[in-house]
Image (tube, rainbow, N blue to C red; front, side):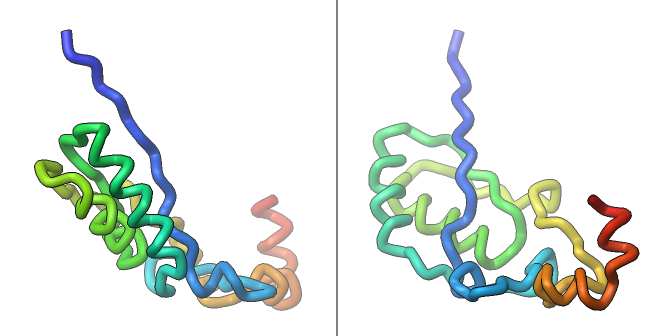
Length: 112
């Protein structure tokens, strides 16, 4: 029997993550990766894992992470699936949590 091992890897750090009050990116907004060197090192380490398939959300930041990992995995397949997409923040997308709390406190309180 062949064992199946699943590695869950979050996308790399983005320029948005470095802001004092990061925006809610969700599904429609994106930010560039900032730690590609670390991801490239991880990709080299993953090469030894003999990966078969890499699943990613359709967001550019997640696909960039997956492609960096694939560079170290010659035989891996890339599968893009909406099932892994980020949360849809709706009208909050592009706002910071501070802005959401200030401008939509009642709805924010309902989501806690």
